[in-house]
Image 1 (spheres, helix red, strand yellow):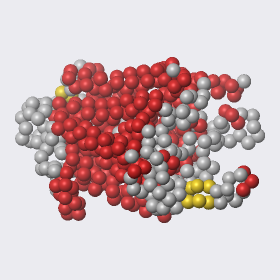
Image 2 (spheres, helix red, strand yellow):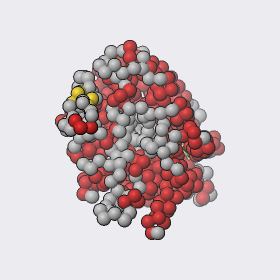
Image 3 (cartoon, one colour):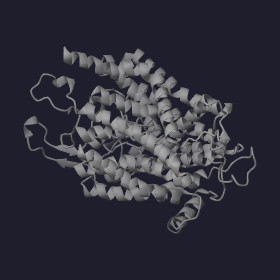
Length: 573
């Protein structure tokens, strides 16, 4: 268990200075960092025709976000379908079918990386690098740009000192924030992590697949084809950008993608590094240090509770081994070289963020650990994805402020700006969209068993289907892979949840922030609700738990809870 404490301590030690760097590098005030990156950024702005000095309203940012994503969608869809006609395809891999290409494009465009294909067998090097890795770099940067805009909106925008009440507020420039995030944050981190992983043996080459002769020829296999490629850069950004999509189908459970205990440590740290650094960034970016401690306290409380439950669960025996002499921790679906403790840690951190990468098979988790993974995705704001995790947390914060204001008999307000009917309608729509779409899709899939291709009946079968759609909505991408999800049904139904789960969850809070920014600031009085206190933090935790449980407790009872109780009863009997 010591490796868990070392990992978490290393994340905190790295995230704190990185958060300070993010506040300076992405802030609106000039810094010495500009001397290094500004010349490159000015070239990029001229190349894409952007006026970096022009601010944007929330509507302008939303339009730029959607328009730029539409352009990327067309380009990547074409690359995936026409890869057999494009360069860097030494293994002669054919183009993807339209529905697999559509799902793959939508999945990586939304920072989800849900994979209904095996990358080493179905993508060329050009598709991996020009399509997949490009999106893995750009989409978290776009999410961070939206997060910065929402933060500015809560405090009146960049023109708060000059704008009058009701005037449009400047929430930043979407393209500037995106370019800065790519050049100042993700590319440097990606370079460092790529070198670390290459050092540990992760392939980094443009050579074609390697051919090896098996030692034991009695199985009738004369040779083994081992796909390689520029794997290390993709693994680096898949972790750092809360992407999760791996070069190989089994992801970081494959020794080529995660060969050593040290590479496993580097990859786990990378899952949590940037989301936690963003939390440390908040206080300096907004000049409200207590907001960082509120956010950190709430997120860390959930995170540690979930880690503890998952670790306990996976250190229990698998029900299939009941009665055997060697009855130890649950090793089903896990790499012997990694063990159950770090596998459980990875499974809960990858679902607390929107990462979704795996180093063990989630379908083989004991029911409690599987339920914890689902709960992490349903909350979707325990660290969360890059930028979108912060936005999701602020949604819960606004709902908690509204409910707290009602309880104390005052008009709800945050930092002096009243939360009124328009904002609550938008927030309510967002809160209701999640259960409505996930549960409707789950019910439809379960009612059409010929389409679901479930490998398990009963409680676990419900969990498989529910997990897939919850993962799509949360832009996570992991799965209970007993599911035959490479079909037109799964590709198209998941695309719907992928797109709504990304764009609704970012644009609706952006609209709320834009509306709040234009409001008059009420002076602080003795009756003003102070949200940066332990008491409010407990209220916020209660709101998150109630919203998640009230919406999803029935389906959790039919899935992991029911499975855990049935297995416990079987063990006792």
